[in-house]
Amino acid sequence: MSDPRPLGVFDSGLGGLTVVSALMAALPHERIIYLGDTARVPYGTRSPETVIRYARGCARVLMARGVKALIVACNTVSAVALDLLRAELDLPIVGVVEPGARAALRAAEAVPSPDGAPPAKIGVLGTLGTIASGAYPRAVARLSTRLEVVQQAAPLLVPLVEEGWIEGVVPELAVERYVAPLIESGARVIVLGCTHYPVLKGTVAQVAARLSGLEVPIVDSALATAEAVETLLREERVLRAPLRDASDGSRLELLVTDLPASFAVTARRFLGGEAAPEVAQIDL
Amino acid sequence: MSDPRPLGVFDSGLGGLTVVSALMAALPHERIIYLGDTARVPYGTRSPETVIRYARGCARVLMARGVKALIVACNTVSAVALDLLRAELDLPIVGVVEPGARAALRAAEAVPSPDGAPPAKIGVLGTLGTIASGAYPRAVARLSTRLEVVQQAAPLLVPLVEEGWIEGVVPELAVERYVAPLIESGARVIVLGCTHYPVLKGTVAQVAARLSGLEVPIVDSALATAEAVETLLREERVLRAPLRDASDGSRLELLVTDLPASFAVTARRFLGGEAAPEVAQIDL
Image (cartoon, rainbow over all chains, first blue to last red; front, side, top):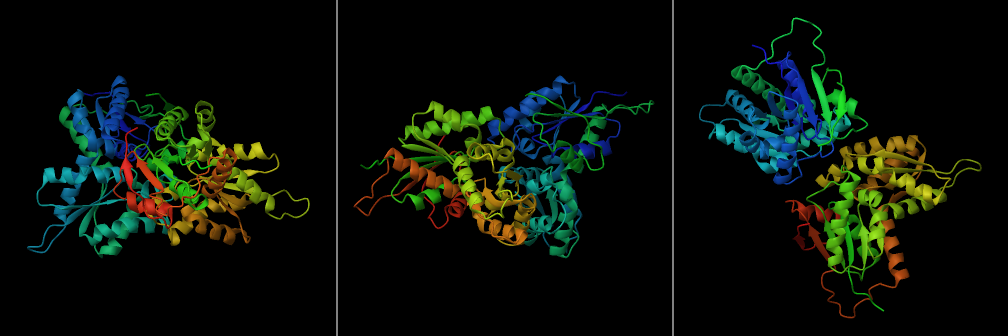
């Protein structure tokens, strides 16, 4: 009982590689094909119709390569196109918003609150597009009617991460600018609602702790998504068994629609310790 | 001899309003229709074919409203589509790159350099798209074979300006990050190669002076473009004469393709002291 087919992961750009990194850690035997639609990034500013059209194109490319499940590592696509992709396509599909909302809920329920006090609020950091879509409050509301969600768009964090400017006073002050209103509104759990943000997770945790005087759990939707994928593969009985032969070949194939000069550097940043994989440019 | 037809100005977003602000100051009797293609911003990441298609659409809308000249207040369109628009359309067209390059050249030639020393280099700050296009070095090379151009992409400056974060340590350090390599490469004149940047002009000047120990002229391509438009209208004899009636009506009409919530605030930021005008949403 081993399903050797790869997992298909796509995102508008390279941020989804944080999800790939979490998947590789959680599922060390799976092969992954990642598609970054770098020629049409960002999706966050496009109309829902356009996002749906782009998402269908990405899904088609990955399905033509025989993937056993689709992971939508893009908050915008997860917010506007996931139900439709699930209705149209005959394979399991996981987005980043639902797992992130579920993990935030668990974290908020674990925060101790005095008797009779309202439960901890969930704070969401995201791009303008994700925040405007209301996807996280909607996903939390589907799971619980008790928990309140406060949101904050954080437009500087993506360019900071893409520049690799992730340490020092500037990223700290930028994170503080966005985290402060969440803490002031009573957020005691913070969701990283964009696949770029896990690179700044330590800074977010530190700033939130300093501002609130409490330890604030930071929910990384990349990690939550990897857990959801693992559960799904188990349930569907499509895990890939470990190979006896140690020479497992390359576990990660990377497709992009545009080839920025700084690609290798950026990919390494998102993949954490992983070596940058071979990359191929394709046309959608 | 008065031509009452308005000027047509377009940009991918709202940054081009810095050009409008300069035009209103230089040409106080002209009426202006501004089109910001806010639904499809940014153009900087799109293929030249797409940018050309979008630019044709913007030009068509403005020409249908009877403008007497087109001002392309977008570095990306100026870089990739200007020659084509000029060949296709039967009205005067001014872009932002040529006037910016011309003003930079004048400024560089005015910088004193010791006998026998090479002339001051021109430093260009721009978006990734504008820098990658090489439009400024090309435009300078057409005007002079002596002057050297060094470039620096500055991806954090647009989000900083759009957030209104234009004072304090974060914009200063961000500007320093981009200005320092230009100064180290010998730039003694800096061109603001993006219509968002004039909002940060004071910070750029101050940082460049501190790093170089010299006064570094900052070329604002919005101002240079307004001068070029004034010259063109004079040459073509299509200036609008001052009206005797003081009630001149509204001088600025604003069209956008998408209506962000923060529109009025952002527009005021780019227009300087000007009151935010009435705005209409259109479909392209």
